[in-house]
Each structure stands twice: as C-alpha cells, then as structure tokens.
Length: 184
Image (cartoon, rainbow, N blue to C red):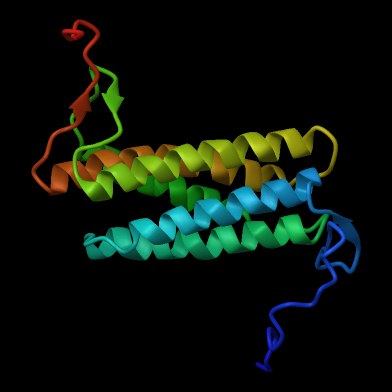
C-alpha cells in the first residue's frame, strides 16, 4: 500500500467544509459528519478499554469491533454504501448470549463502575448510545444502512454485558443502584 496519508493537513477544511470519500464536500456540522464523529469517538472509547488488562477472548472481540466501527465510519464517509453485513450483527448477538449466559440474572438496576475496565466498558456503552441516536437522526433525512443501525444497537447491549463480565472476572460484583440510600 502506498502512503495514503502523507500529508496530514490540507487546508481544504479551513472554511468549515470537509470532504467525503465520494469526493463531495459538506459542512463540518452536517449530520453525516456528526454521525461519523460519534462513531470515531466510540471507536476511541473501545480503544481506551483495550488498554486495560482484559481476558484474551474479550480483547479479540473488541479489536474486531474496532474494525467493524471503522467500516461503519466508511459507510458514513461514502453515502449509500453498505460495508457491514448481517453476519457482523449476528456475531455481536452470539457474544451477548455467551457472556450474558455466564452472569447472574439482574434483579436491580446497576451503576457504571466497579473495576476501571468495567467502568470504561460502561462509558463506551454510553458513547455507543449517543452514536446510535445520531445515526437514527441521520436516517430520518438520508439513507443509512439498517445493518449499521442494528450493529450499534447490539453493540451497546454487548458493552453493558461486558461491563458486568469484567467486574465478575475481577471478583467484583455489580454496583447496585439503591433507591433507599441515605442522602446526606
């Protein structure tokens, strides 16, 4: 592969527009660019989680998710394209079933926290939900792949389950929300 990013600054965005991969230019506050930015932030949050000590199978899963998120970003950069497929959604569902099957059923609401890794998984989940809202908003006015929207929806569920799993693996229970807690 050649040097695709040999020049980092181009000055072409100085006036407030940016280029899409299809060659068109849009305003930097365009809903498509906002969705792309949310997916980039989500991918970065997953990358931050990957800096933690994690079980190897979770590490592999999250690394694959980063590649999928980059592909989904490609869909945002190339309007009308579909780079993710239903297999990717199915892989997330299988991972949710696997990891959730090892957890105690929830009887209470939980708070993000416990271990640092679990807290980072919950932070990534919150960023994922925001990215999903942005994709839904974009889809109200432009074509967005249904598979991409499903993928992000399942991913937030998986990140929730992984947060709980990482606490369990570390020997730390879920942080339960207590309605009746003493208020100071």
